[in-house]
Image (cartoon, rainbow, N blue to C red; front, side, top):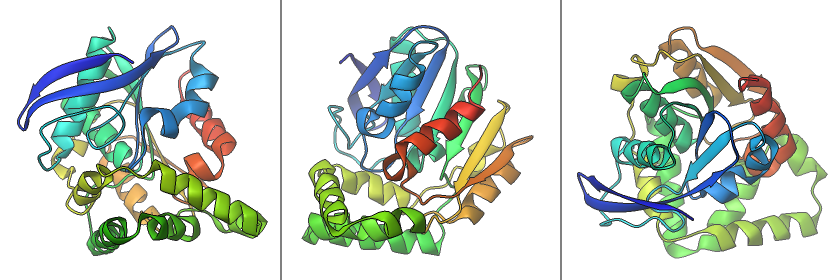
Length: 264
């Protein structure tokens, strides 16, 4: 995969990213603990015939390396912006999930001239006590027993319909799959989740924006997405019947919802 080296406040970052397809630019920003590949593969496959898709691995994920300092939204936004530029994109549509949705909104606030549209799923403007408590629990579990963390995600990140439909074997397979995805760098992203604030950037967003909430989100509840939509001028709010982990819970629904709101 291509790599772009950039100077940042924390030193040099070497950002690895996926680039596939042809057409207008589409920048995809993954959530906590995911990568460009794991968060976005079904969407990439669905749209690469009409978009040039760029999906970076943010610091703490995949092949991206840096100096290991605490992460900021500005650091991650800068990495995504650098990947898009390195891939030859002067302007692009942006889609983000969870932490990546907050980073995507920050990109649109930082670079209004470059962002053509914005689709945000399960994002938030700032950490509140609920999110801080969740982040603290996640960090403790990752440090002591990553498999327990993966098991917790199975019952908190998925919607009730998905959970009712699962067999014992399904639960075990999903927990094993999530455990295999956990990398040490997730702790840096979790610490950012615990202390995030893009209040100073969301008011600068001018791109047409759709904010998507999962009705059964126990991790970033829907009032956070409502606040995002209220803080971005002209943003539309959409709610779907799913949990926070929609990209993994129901990839087809995730792709269908995003396709509905991406430009034709």
